Image 1 (cartoon, one colour):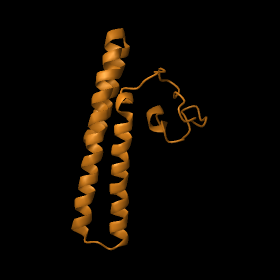
Image 2 (cartoon, helix red, strand yellow):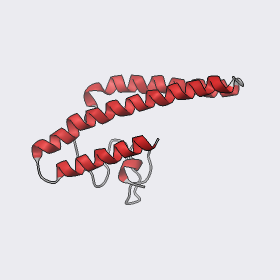
Image 3 (cartoon, one colour):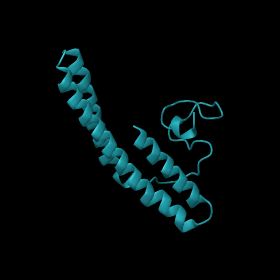
Length: 125
């Protein structure tokens, strides 16, 4: 498991120690503010809405709704998550990558590579 995969899950860090919520994962630079910080409440509201869509899917299955109707809602939920991911990626590029570019050095290359890997993961889904 990579450090990124362990973030926010309460999973063990690469060192095997349990992760403390809010702690900076091993191997990452500490940042006082992440790129999404200015829109955090909007993001949380959006994620709660998506969570409601998922709960609606569970309810549809429990109620034996028609397959195509469920698939339509799966598609809507998937699009909502993709849209959220794109917004978060944009904020990462504008904040974290741009900040690394200003500082110069190898960090900008690392941030670009990190963003490229995130984009590749998004395209695989």
